[in-house]
Amino acid sequence: MKIIRAKDYNDMSRKAANIISAQVIMKPDSVLGLATGATPVGTYKQLIDWYKKGDIDFSEVTTINLDEYRGLPKTHSQSYWYYMHENFFNHVNIPENKIHLPDGSNLNSEAACEEYEEIIRKAGGIDLQLLGIGTDGHIGFNEPGEAFELLTHCVDLTQSTIDSNQKFFGDEEMPRQAYTMGIKSIMQARKVLMIVNGESKADIIERALFGRVTPEVPASVLQMHPDFTIIGDEAAFSKI
Ligand code: F6R
Figure 1: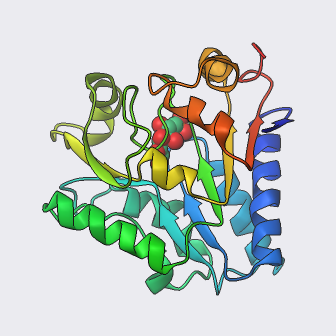
Figure 2: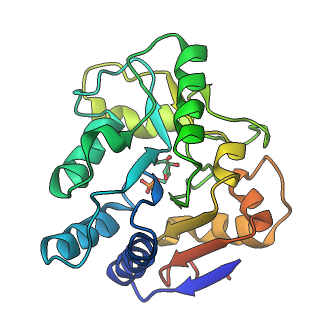
Figure 3: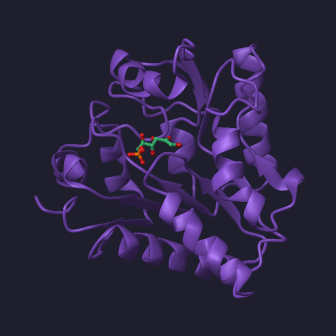
């Protein structure tokens, strides 16, 4: 495990973008596992900036996102497909046919999840998986208690996830399920890069990195990953 301390959110984002861009320079046809949420927005911005300056080329890159709401069409403003296009894909040169997210519009969960694992296999596995972490230690949509040996699967969202995300859907009821890469799919990535910022993550970072490895803290499994790097700002690392 490599722990990289960043001064603040911008510094964390720049350092993460540096690692991703080094990956793409060293292996132009890299398979990048990507995440949504608030944390990676600055990393994507930095990568877009370097792409626009001509410093990085994504034309051979394949992307595989962690998760997607079940039952949302791609074009819905709260879908992760939409987020990824708004925050990253629309601004760089990754070919659309190399962009992958679980198909939230496919209500046949078994087929949707099997199809996604097949996409990962056909791509040759993930070279670098970018992750955020939830305050309860979740990674992807793998909530506390989720078995470590799961591949891509359908999850029922917890009440706390529903409570914190319903506001983004306004009056519309948000989905109650999601498709997510499982802990096993994440652990099979050759490198894992987690980014974390803010005081609200300080407690869980201490438990995830130095506590017992347990499904109750899904991110704790990363202690066992052979190539795991975490970049955090001072607030997130204030307890370690
Ligand atoms: C995103 C994802 C989630 C987030 C986590 C942290 O694709 O799978 O696990 O990484 O919820 O979210 P933020 O970055 O909003 O704190």
